[in-house]
Length: 305
Image (cartoon, rainbow, N blue to C red; front, side):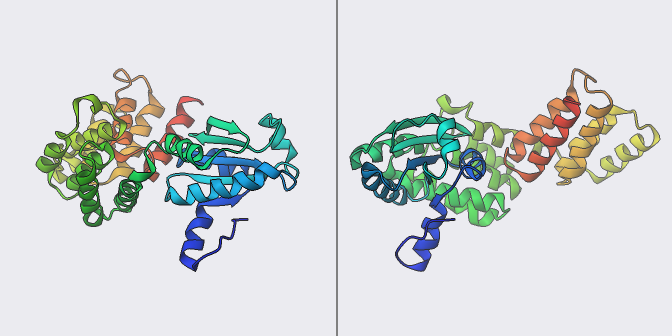
């Protein structure tokens, strides 16, 4: 059950999302899976532990001050001995930090406030003083994911005003411009990427989206290619061209299905060209996009069947 925190209702609701209690049964969802989206700190404690009574409130305060950069999950070791044993907890308080489903840091015993803040800063990947930037980027990314490009773009611009080299903001703004049909503007935005960050994941995704956006959408060509594969379902070349054209027209799910069809029939066709094209789609759509997630499941089902 989520921890109920004191204060105004709005603040309580927000903090309840950041700080919660869990148990052995909830560990996978509340820690492992949750850490794939956001760093999670796990506090192993017990009611009889004196240092725990000092550390836990300090952790809660620091997590709330981090303004959403990390989450805190608390586990009573007396009530959850199985997970405590799995984590090899020998003394408490014991704190572990999880990212991407894996433990990445931790400490034993109570720490002073300054060291707790340093621990969270390291985990969050940004100083707590930059939480306004993090909040801007997070809000912008949520708007982008929801297709609210007009709302997302100015937030990305504000983020860039705080940090001109933030690749998340550069890539996000470029994707907003692509969605609005401003391909040249997107190219100019991506040109702001520092040389040392050209291989950044967000930049690669935006670059792939720009490349796909530069493929013109032609309804006549789509009809011609559709007729070609209707006459010859084994015409993989026409089918892949159709997938690219459909994606350019915004018909992403149809594009995905055609590439999955090719891979299912002949995964090695043309040096795995269909798989390569599909991976480019995933990169352009974004790794958390619902269609990307569904497409990866379909691809895995074929490759590992």
